[in-house]
Image 1: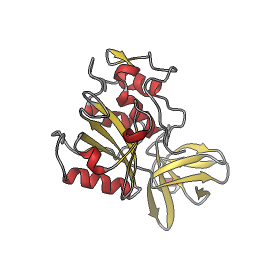
Image 2: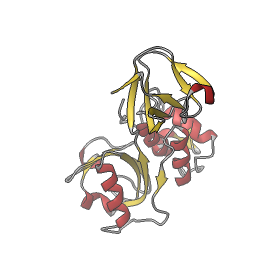
Image 3: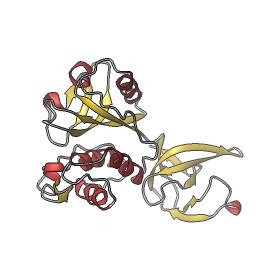
Image 4: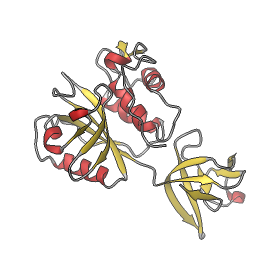
Length: 241
């Protein structure tokens, strides 16, 4: 699966309503959410995230997306461990501990993130971008508006002073594929006589897991995203991908 570099001015959805305007004009928030969510929900598009966010109080009429709306949307799509890291703007600051921790965690490959940028090459006012990868030398961005160049491959010195707010998104701990049909979805990580059966998964179903837990020497995985978000499967009849 992975992530997707959606653009808010794509002709397929640029004219869709969002936040008192259109996705093209106001939709960097739901577009960044779609970039991240694609890893769990490959059928996602900015049109779908914008619709959900508009209907569920995430949009700030005429001004894009509430900061709280970004977290609300991420949790809705399965990223339950998402957090907003700061509530006071970092714009113009250098060597911030918040930025250091944010970049360090993404570099660990256990997290991705979203940054709200201030006036800069990224925006004339405010703009959400998806931070997909960090190395020693570069920060790799999917920008909902700009394509390529310094807007999508940059470094800390060029990027940090324009950051306003940061959102950290914990990635799945593992992805597995079922190897037989009828893998049981459980309410809890316990044997079936002690917990409720929710559903079954067909063979070759891929699921992301947010947690691995061993109970009485049996390993269970907690499903992340999708209609079975937060439920459990036994890992015996799966393989890691």
